[in-house]
Length: 157
Image 1 (cartoon, rainbow, N blue to C red):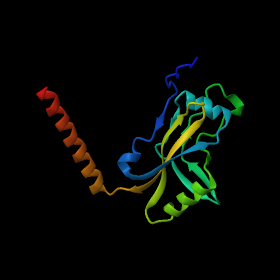
Image 2 (cartoon, rainbow, N blue to C red):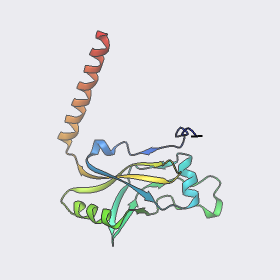
Image 3 (tube, rainbow, N blue to C red):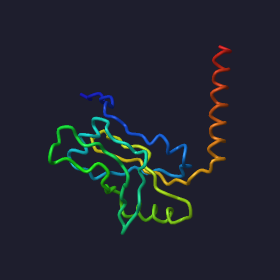
């Protein structure tokens, strides 16, 4: 007997500003090394990727600036909210990312933190290039144009 999949009830933490500030060139899924209280806090949806970024140092990828609020029942064994966290990637993937990031203007930006089907915490990491203010304005104009087109199509029905 095949059991139906459970709907995903765990929260997904998104970096909402990333797609506005950066042009996403490539994405990769990676694991995240966490302490127990950090996982419990993430399950409660208490994390923020607003100022987070990743850096490659000595062949390892580290997630910096990712804020996970202290767990409410964690008392003395609670974690530090903004500590550097190691990302889990294969050596070949790290080399590819490192080659791309050494190019001018490219950076590693986390887009999402979520729990996969097996309950493991995953990070959607992207290679991104910063947008200029002209590009940002152009994107806003295109989004407004799409909205107007959708409204017009709904009125015609």
